[in-house]
Structures are given as C-alpha cells and as structure tokens.
Length: 155
Image (cartoon, rainbow, N blue to C red; front, side, top):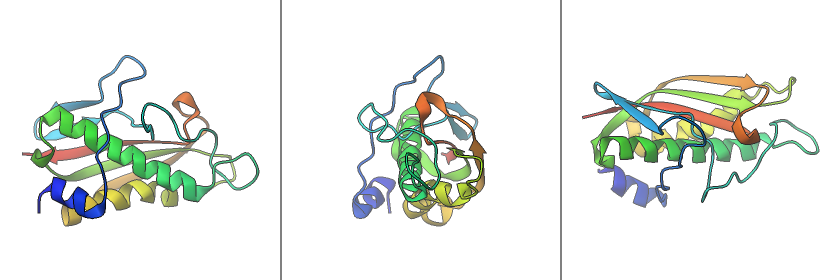
C-alpha cells in the first residue's frame, strides 16, 4: 500500500512543511537517508500549546503532549517528503529523537514520544520500527512542549 493511501486510510492529512524559525532547512538528504531538523508541533503556523509537560495546574498534561509529539512527527514526515520530492520515495524510519520540555519531577518522556513513534508505525508498518531516544529538557524553542527529529530512509 502506498504511503498516501495509508495516510488516507488513517484519516491523516499531511501538513504543509513548517517554515524554519531560524537559520536552517527543514530536512537534508545524505546518501539514502533524510535527516529532519527538529520539528515542533506547529499547526497552521502556530503552536497549539506552550509550556512544560507535567501534572498540575498550568502544565501541559502528558496526554496532550503525546498528541503534540504525533503532530511533530507528521511535520517531520512532510519535511522529509519535500526533501526527496515525493512522499512515496520514503521507505522507512531509522531513528527518532524526541525532546520533552518538562518539569524536573516528570519522568514520562518515553510515553510522550510514543505519540510520534506510534503514528510513524501506523503509517509505515514494519518499516516504521525505529531506534529512539526520548529526552527531558528544561526548555525548547518558542516554549514548545515537544520537539521531534527523524531520520528516514528513502529510495
């Protein structure tokens, strides 16, 4: 099944490539790999939530952060597809690194980043299984709760 067909089956519309917010490009091709820059969970040019992930008033709940990680992964997919010129040239996911801006006592970073890993698995199937890191950090650009970078393979 094509990636576009799989996205349609899942009810996912691939977002437009998010323009860089600083001096970098959204994705770079090297050999048979596409490296995405860190992707924030932008939707229509805006962050749907800001702040630290944790439990309590004024914090971004882990469940919402997981949805934001999913959006970040879709933004990475869009950037990678644009870099190779065709979504269907992407053949799999090699590595995903997720960053979670979280309060010091929050230890659920892996669960948050599952939002990104799971959607890529749904899209690519077995080829979506990947190596991964989930890292807690004190702050991310634009006060985003999450950021994801992905290495895709392509043919």
